[in-house]
Image (cartoon, rainbow, N blue to C red):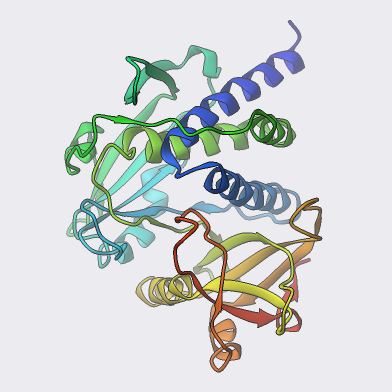
Length: 335
């Protein structure tokens, strides 16, 4: 088997595992589709940034409450899955402690090895069957951050998992149309193996180690940090969007996300930016260009705009999703 053929096999293997993780941890096929569309924007930007910038992105993290709550910062942990050493995150973690009362953790992964050689682990059972799916797990080391000393100390992953109470014995696998699944596997196979490994590892911990059999609150993630000209790490919120159909013609954001990004920017003493992969429409989803706006500007320009009903994202199709739309002209093209 030549090297390129084996790379394709590794990609297909991980993307099928990713499908299993997601199909057990979403409400249905619509949320499954929205999740993958979100991944598309993040992977596309990682590739664009690697080709157009000299600096490295710093992995974003996840706030995850250890009990049922709509407030993502209530009794929350903060964790990051990364290949980079813990020392690179000291600045971020010192700030994040103010929003993560239940602890801050870092999971350093090693994804250079062939995924077919990774050890396998079972994280949940499937409702109505005795089936327990074993997922490949890359070599990793978990750390806990100690803000008083600014140091990361090694721990076992079970120390994090034990913070959550078991709520369900098993998860129901949602029915995902084969065409949808295969479409995303084919689409994502175009990305670098390294990016697919990182995406899979991110989801392995969220939908595997910390899956929905546990009592969890509403998660809130930081997509990525990018190094600004002044040396600060800026927060990027990355989405794939086509322009709204009604006035103002532009790109919208959930008002809850607007508020949380502004809160994060304040706590991290930095700026947050909304980065949009501008696509032609919801069907073809062909990328046109990248558009970006400072969240301070977004909030100012939409201050007196009406609140409209937005998409459901990962929530129920019957959920209420108040959204503000900022005019297209207020966004700057990223070059």
